[in-house]
Length: 68
Image (cartoon, rainbow, N blue to C red; front, side, top):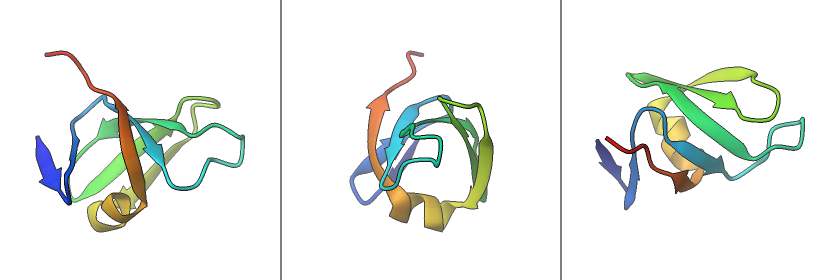
């Protein structure tokens, strides 16, 4: 689990970013975590890999947590 600036997120969580994807969807699933984070658009299944620091700046909120 990662705690950065009062935002918690884990693998397979559904998150909302500050800007929507060009397809119009604003729900993203975290599919890889490490130094870079890969997120997948829930609308068109396009995936994007961005550095963790950039991800935490662009993250608006966690919409759905994974149940462990």
